[in-house]
Image (cartoon, rainbow, N blue to C red):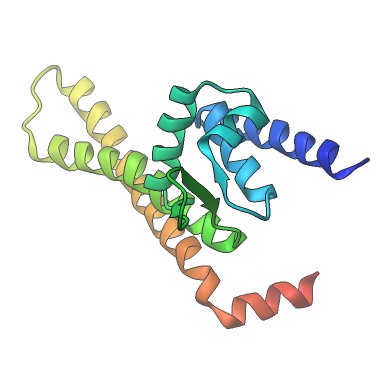
Length: 168
């Protein structure tokens, strides 16, 4: 398999994984393309390489920048913008966990806090059932938050890195 075939396979698989994780396929494909490329790419190069429209590339590139997965570069003498992906896998994982936490865990936790401060009225059994659900969900969200914080900090933990090397 040549490098172009290998890159295409990676881009397609990363796109499918992104889709499974709730990330737009085209966003994941753009990220994969930038990951597998050793040089900065312009919007036009991304469009040509993975056959996406300019609008699609621009929207997803902004989102990748918001997730801290891609950086915009300017080159002297060039009017075009160029993009490069963070190639550090630990950093990528940390940025994804941080963004997922911000978009998913924090809003659910805020909603739970609001519900716990609200007097809920209705049939006693239904209210008890609902409050038990909210308590259980809060416990789960708090544990997921702690787990995500641990995942974010793992890259900086030398002991963890050494332990993982010993296990492999």
